[in-house]
Length: 556
Image 1 (cartoon, rainbow, N blue to C red):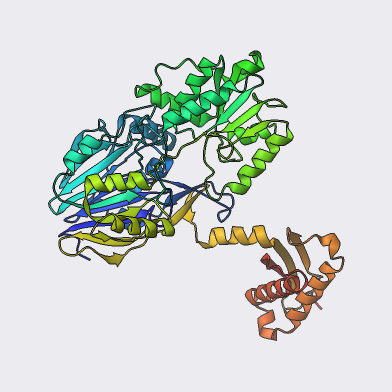
Image 2: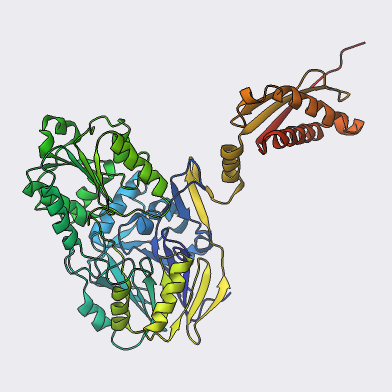
């Protein structure tokens, strides 16, 4: 397809899902990437922590990829840059705080000297080939979130990134709606906009209000240790907790590596400078219980997060007991309910008082609710709404909302949909490859590939291994040996191994003389016999491997 004339929008991640954002804009054949993030794995990817976009489509066209522009430092927007950059090999543009976070990731991959990172002051502008970018401060749950007004010869697109309208953000400036108004004067062709909280009525809430609520809550906990867990990237919440801890005579102890990294990056970028020094984990035990506030990672119950390790008494420096309190200053991300509720129960069994957003006002979202979306549409006045950063139902609802607000056109899009914005009628003109890659030892593998499919089958069905010894004529000379792992409780099936042996021998006898002399046919016959027997007895389909050993016939 010819991309040489026109303006195109193409998401390869983040449309039809929440997380793993990767958006592409094309103007006259040259591409600009906005964000390149990760997602976190669930039970569908056992043994996997991170998911990255399958960006091979744009990687194959990297000679036309001008740059990567990162809107902010959340993992689902910046987390895959370092992992995938070798496929792109183009410059990166980011704000000072985001660049600090990115530099740590580049160093982990050993490519910090190879990547050209251009630091863009918040609220400034850059020209990248035919793309003129105006950066606009919008509040979010991390510093320096930058919306982008993208001006091209074919029209202007407002790319919102993640945002909210917070009148008291605690860290960083308020959303710069005056600049948004100024640069939106005239026709804005399209707005590509965050859909996360489209179902939430009203507004998302202010970080300043959470600060007041947490202050009041901490005043009601005069005894025992207090531990607060929140998203490490929520620098405003870190600041809030540090400030109220000081007011109530408690010393803040950071627990979790990502908190150290975030706070260090924030200080380097001019944030958190007025906060008291944090106490190290190994020094906190010397403080009285009522003088300690642990600020911990693991707000979603991650097994390797600090809070989960503390709950199972697996942390080298931190422990909790009866009379202590844990505050979960975060929302429950859909899909994490079981893990988090199990963590709450673990802590409760220790005698710890657990407080979540269900009991107290301890968290606000970083994404816009309906009133905030309406306000943004009122300011920008786009001709076309293109909802992103949402699952299917979010995108559909966002389209309906935009149309109800008077936007002339709303287009529901998915990863891989190539949307021609101009010239002429806006329409999806092609579907290109997109997908998800699981980050595993040695690299990335397709999430829907055979490797992970086999791993899933092994988890749910177990594995069987068999050894079949045959002579050159194809006769089985010894009883087949079968080993099962995680298939059934073999104590409940005392005749299982005898049944398996007989099934293998019987199936082998049904082979032709010619097939009995071919190892591949002997292997397949034994595999079928094992799987059919176990399926009949237990309803399982184990991953089955058969090894055939062929011995020479003895001399007569």
